[in-house]
Length: 266
Ligand SMILES: C[S@@+](CC[C@H](N)C(=O)[O-])C[C@H]1O[C@@H](n2cnc3c(N)ncnc32)[C@H](O)[C@@H]1O
Image (cartoon, rainbow, N blue to C red; front, top):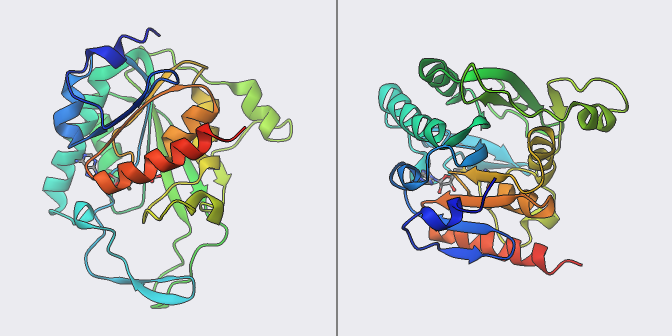
């Protein structure tokens, strides 16, 4: 993959490190994604709004806390939420390379809409990964099962794509057995949150596995909902190029700090 993609977008990056090919952009991904060259991205990881910030309560570290993540996570109603998912997924499909893949994570609030939108757009669904969180918080109401999983859909650009799957490496990481679609990974370690908190930060171990499974060194990785930058930190660790987009400056600042920590780690 050439580095042209880093030069072609006519928007000032919020942060860039040309030596390590990292770019962060501040803005609405619906406006920024159409500016990237068609077919220029090898892999996308997206963790879109869950649309669950409805004023409910949950349990965190043994305490009753609000479920609200931020204004960006407020539901606009089922139909508007689905239109939003169709819009950003369609832009992602345009900028993926012929053999490019996308991974999208979500809870039940959003993942069915994401899966349906992918089917409507003609993505080829490769796997649904069940991410199991062994130390999930208890359910306070005692009226539901404890939520302890998220789904991650892995899909190729279309039916003709010949996606990368580093099968042998995944088998090696799975003690010599074919890796299953049930991944047990604990939420981010306190060390990963030392630069500040993001309400839905993904663990580095999860992103590292995703990158190792489906990309090669120097591939261009994009995350349209960058958040705390876990995808970028994993990309940096594994020598992949990275483009992150987030609407929040505060989260991009957190990302810059995390990237700088990583860059200064011997
Ligand atoms: C679920 S979080 C992503 C968390 C991220 N995966 C991490 O590990 O930290 C979604 C992020 O998308 C951002 N966001 C919401 N709507 C957006 C939009 N239209 N364009 C760009 N970013 C958006 C929010 O600010 C939030 O940080």
